[in-house]
Image (tube, rainbow, N blue to C red; front, side, top):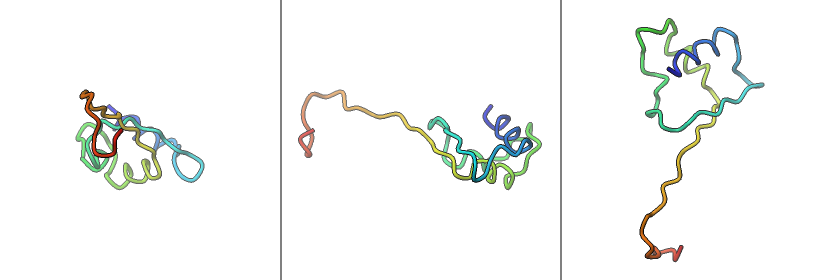
Length: 72
């Protein structure tokens, strides 16, 4: 799904020094380098379109109530 969005980002030139994309962090590492046959965009174009993006990640909390080595 996001491949399609990044394709539009590339075609509309919505990337570069003036743009920062915030992406959710559940995509696989280097997801933009995986060729999707349904998308008419090269790996190089996808890489250029996501250059400088910020990825968010979920914070994994320990369900245990026992404090860890750092006493947190």
